[in-house]
Length: 75
Image 1: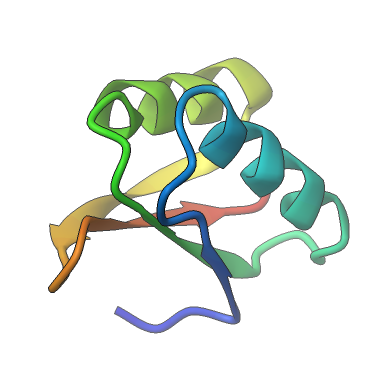
Image 2: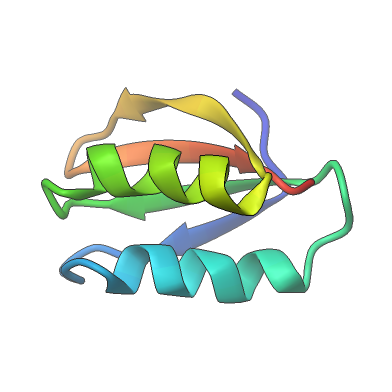
């Protein structure tokens, strides 16, 4: 999947991956895609929930060598 920016949140526990994603998304233009790389087990629930609550589009996730990649399109 293509993306415009990447955020490495490996080693960070809930709620830090989502908080860092929120901060990074503030600097993006509408329609740009952020790839969040996280290994927190709670991220599989937290990231889609964050997108629903904030209005961003959760494009999906895919396993990575370490953790998971989450794709978020800024509203």
